[in-house]
Length: 67
Figure 1 (cartoon, helix red, strand yellow):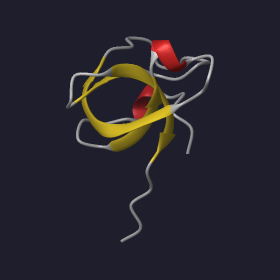
Figure 2 (cartoon, helix red, strand yellow):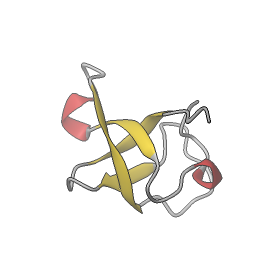
Figure 3 (tube, one colour):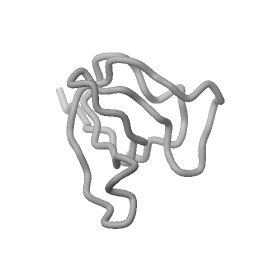
Figure 4 (cartoon, rainbow, N blue to C red):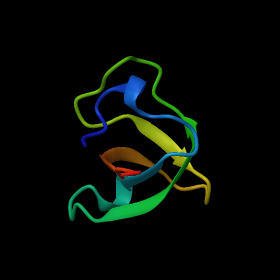
């Protein structure tokens, strides 16, 4: 699932983000959402979040939790 809509992202959700330094390579960093930094409802490059480890990036994938 893509991370372009703010309504799809919640605190505590496991996501994969691309950090600013990794935008060229597209390397993804996995983590858990601590804060949502984007104020708008949508963003074409992904909603910007801060992970629990302090890293900041734009959400590219949301981990699905199949229960």
